[in-house]
Image 1 (cartoon, rainbow, N blue to C red):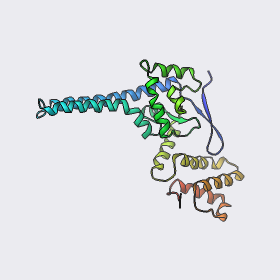
Image 2 (tube, rainbow, N blue to C red):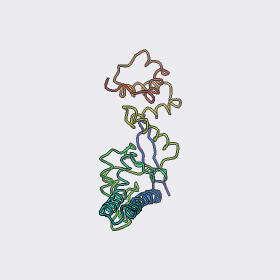
Image 3 (cartoon, rainbow, N blue to C red):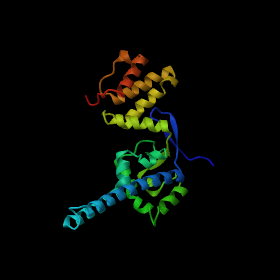
Image 4 (cartoon, one colour):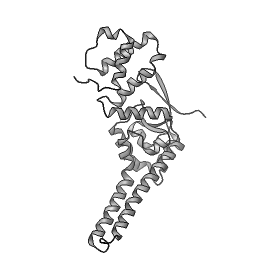
Length: 246
């Protein structure tokens, strides 16, 4: 059986093929996340019960308040676990990470806040009538193995190997200490990864175009003629704070 793939133009113009996660991978990721959020909810309930029975609290009016608070925290943990974590991790919950998969847009980029919110709102339909029957049927029938939430949000779940996932995680972490977006950092990272494989004549134009896009400071014509200097400037973008908007 031919594996479903997502073909996208990479940031340097080279077409990339991303393997699409099938129902099995998605189910494994979902069950992992479900167990985590269920355990989290049960922990809140257990703490509430123990506090309610604790000496000094048992039998007092505050005991009822403690129990209600535990129930509310358990419900919040259970129902908001996936939407909140998808937003915080930019499309890679612990379950998806364990399954070596992540959520991307149809052009292979990290999904934005709007897409992730839409994707999670549609869970209300995908989970009908129970146990994600609608979502699972949709995943099996659609070419990209997506549920209704993915169709509405323009997202898809792709598989990632450990190296690619680790590289992306590092870029996400680095984006928090720089004014460059994850996509911009990925652009620089990809060009540097392919640097030695590119023909000499192709390196300078690609590097100049990228630096012009990411740097507000005027380029030094003398430095641009030297591919080694161009590479050094690209590497500096991954380490130093970029001079955007100056």
